[in-house]
Length: 459
Ligand code: NAI
Image (tube, rainbow, N blue to C red):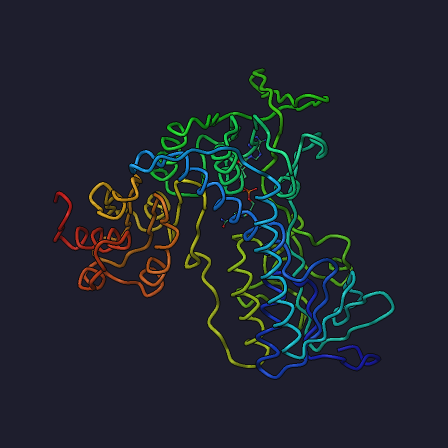
């Protein structure tokens, strides 16, 4: 602590997104004095430009699909048109209500909420305008922003997810650059809204961080939905005029569409904020921490997307809570990134936890994998969805990976994460009863099979 500055707060948090505000709420709950600095809107990317608004769009997309496919269920219906103004107003309504609720929460916990652009001006000091907030501890939580590629300028018909969330007209055709999480979610939305969609992905498969079987199933499902996925396709350049945007691939192939959505990853927002000057160790723009979210500078922590690892809101929440509890002396257990559930909300939905089969083989050598097809699951048949639950276990050991694809499978990740994080053996889960008919039963059935006693599955 610099001798000249008396602390104004126990904790000064720079950034009011998922990581920052969760830290503030928990710290205040624990009786610490907290300042939370935010330059834009409390709630950050997740609430305003990420998780919440995109999932609202995906829900509107599902409504459109249901209307279009009503006849499959004997209900005659069709999509008259997609009213983008109506979709945006629904989405903004959801965000607005949550935003108001969050503001109320922060106000109710006696948190010193400071609006403005903050800067780490010394290891214990965040300066906002002419105000110096001196913390016994400082938490960096400045989040991430959409990346682009060299020579690819965002503007006009070339957008990132941020602009795409505000578009009030529907493109007839879209090129999605990047077949990762954002790419496949937006591809799914645009297709459901009736656009022609082409995904350009440099790697050999979509959602390359997922188990290979999941990527294959998604590619199959997207083909059926008439979404074109060009994998192993590298972007070379793009140009636009008043009527269209053209993308040229390294192979020389060109593609033309109304809109180009760039979804090639998100980068940390951590430069120009005084971190380096304060001596904080960084790598490729990310802030480095140990497993207790501590940077190399005493009393300075970092949480959320600025720290290398999964860029997920719930990881930010967990890290924020962890730091508050650590500072309060509760000695919380470090967070295992592999134990963080992952959901991709495209149609069909993807949910997973732990290691993919390939990663498990690398880690443990021999492993056992089992795939339970949703074809045998009553509720999935009622929904007319296809997919599977795949389990990966250490030979004679616990389950180390669970991978699911199919409509609504994101909702199954809750049980999957308990199984993974409690290092359950197949027999532990097989003895539990899963309600019939639910999609949750598919998990139960997969475990019955893995425990050597399949019910609605061939041995
Ligand atoms: P990502 O890292 O998931 O995917 C980016 C994709 O772009 C990769 O597959 C990459 O190979 C590809 N790519 C990069 N350069 C390319 C090039 N030159 N040509 C063609 N393809 C290229 O990043 P994404 O989708 O932008 O998402 C950013 C972050 O936001 C991720 O960490 C994701 O986890 C998070 N997120 C999470 C969501 C969820 O949990 N449901 C939803 C949306 C985002």
